[in-house]
Length: 263
Image (cartoon, rainbow, N blue to C red; front, side):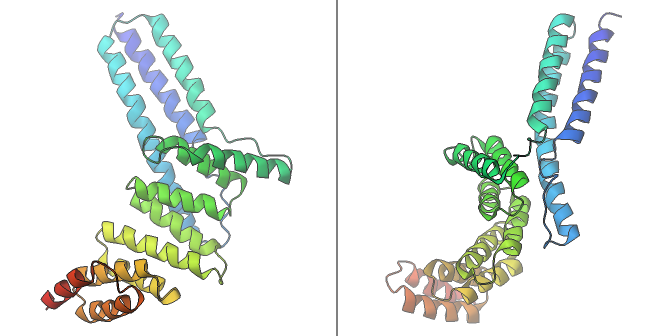
């Protein structure tokens, strides 16, 4: 009988935690993306939200498993743990108060960027992600925040989230911001390459080189992707351009040999 009581209390605590997470944690709830199709916006929010939910459920499930093993632990400790964690999670996922003036908003955004600057992208992933999403809550069209968010996801191999973040940046960029557009297409090509989506990798790197034709890094990536796709014609054409732009490139001979081996 006494062993059942902790089980019931723990189950109840887990239920409360789930309710709080579902109600509070969507840090992108205020995301205003007027130029983004509704289905893409919903997918973007859902992917980030689902990812964060899974991470937190895994973390707290591990804690609860340990408590279950204790079985007959002191009820006082159980109540104390549940109370503290519930308040901690409520605080973590509550929406930050909206700054009252443009100046306050700008100051808050600068503070959040400053906090994120020195955070390691892997060791401090969740904290950095949270700071960047808070910036987006304050300014839903902050290009730099979306860029950093995309890079953060890419670095941590969260490729679907990275795709959505970078794709959204393309929606926000001005038509004449060619350099940034090319960089985003280049980043997307690297993501598609990692996920094995070879056709998409080829098309996005083509966009990058079309916008900025003489960038050695983009041409280098185009060569690797065209060789990967066994597109001998494109690879040979790109090699010729790379030789003109960057004749000192140490990989030219290796690229040439790989192209010769293509059928």
